[in-house]
Figure 1 (cartoon, one colour):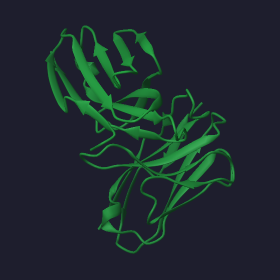
Figure 2 (figure 1 turned 45 degrees about the horizontal axis):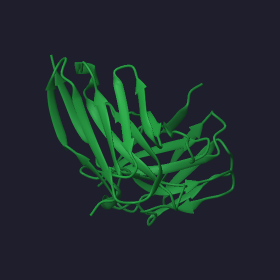
Figure 3 (figure 1 turned 135 degrees about the horizontal axis):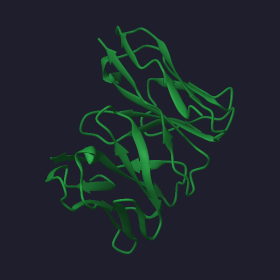
Figure 4 (figure 1 turned 90 degrees about the horizontal axis):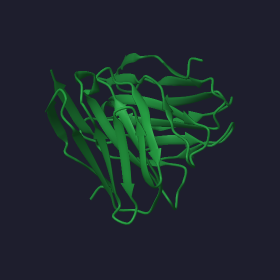
Length: 110
Length: 113
């Protein structure tokens, strides 16, 4: 079983919809990252969080350490949000490396 | 600032050939990483470096070697390429791992025939 699991694997939405992507992990962590990979392949970091909630524009990330779960929400989705969203965790007993989920592919249609 | 750059962007190799991928960063980051990305799998760490002159193995190091002679550069070498090394390779860097985000290069698409 993977240490980091994302759901759903694929997601389609109409423009304007509220979107939620989930990430569950089975190891102790010191931080969790959300990354975005655009169709061209480039990867950018969206959030790093170790507790609570962070917001940037239309993106909101939350984490529940006790439940080993994080969510990424997109409000008022737009076609330019179409990308693969990747969750990665920094294990608390080995802080040099990230463990990555396999990603959630999001397509937003006009 | 250019951020993290990778050369080349694309390469086709024949089985048994060798090549070196170059990663450069201009952010004075201590940590640098090489990942590979394959369909249906998450990014997997090949090798990493926590500072100039240091290297360490990641999850999938076999068939690869690395060097970090200068702080800004991290080289990934394939001594004898195999079809199983067909992948997209990403380099990344971070100031440190604790609480710091990683900055990724644009990727190198390598095909081994």
